[in-house]
Structure formats: C-alpha cells, structure tokens
Length: 161
Image 1 (cartoon, rainbow, N blue to C red):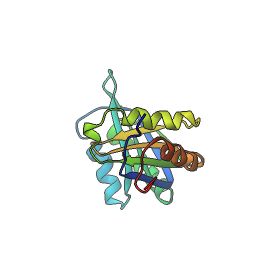
Image 2 (tube, rainbow, N blue to C red; image 1 turned 60 degrees about the vertical axis):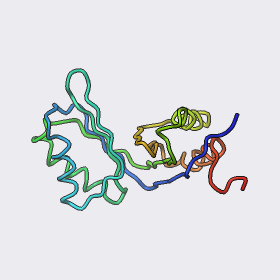
Image 3 (spheres, helix red, strand yellow; image 1 turned 30 degrees about the vertical axis):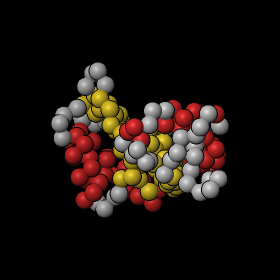
C-alpha cells in the first residue's frame, strides 16, 4: 500500500498539560481563560474544549513547562468566575504533530497517525486537528518512539529521494 505523503513532523517538548473539568458552561468561559493567560504573557500551545450533554465544559491546554505553575495560578484565580472547575496539572508531556499538504482531501491520515502511535504502545492523551495538522499530546518519554513510528508510517519529505 502506498504511504500517505506528509509535509513533515513537528515536535514540542517540555510541556505541562493543564485540565479544567466540570466547568458550568457559559458563552464567555474560553474568552475568560485565554484572555487571562494571554495578559500574563503565557503562550498556550494546544487547546481542546468539549461540552458534555450536561452542558459542562472540559478544557485541556498545554504550555511550556517553565510557565506551568504560573498558568495554574491564573486558573486558580479564575475558578470563582468560571464555576469552580476541578484543575489538574500534568508534567513531562510532549506534542507530536503532522502537517499537510491537503489534509482536507486525504481520508485516512488521522487513522494512520493514531495507529502508528498505538502500534508502539504510545497512549494518546489529547488530540487537536485542523485542515492542515493533526496533533497529539503524549508522555514526553514516548516522543522519540512516536517520531520513529510516524516516520515509518508516512511518506516524508527527503525520505527515499
């Protein structure tokens, strides 16, 4: 079977992943959270938000490990404004991303990506996608194996040229 062509792989190391669970949803929750982090100069590198059937949100975000404690302090300050969500902080995380071209027109990219990671026993902790990228949060220790697995599963620039 012919491998799917990618534009490349991006690695992000030394990350903390923060989670906010059981947020009582209201329209400006995301704005409140990300405005406050931005005002403190904290760069958020990954965001996933979902709303469950009880209309409670869960937000997962990744920041540089050097900004993790400050980001957690900001979220603690916001708790009363956003319904006292449960907060978590996980260290030693990384992100592996694959990028285009033309992901919109190519079925099977996400499945191949996830299967490559799973075949190496790598647990995916969170996923975020766009029309040109697919990113997974994983344990930092798994990043070298993830890069190897993805490199073998896809046709990358420079591979076999």
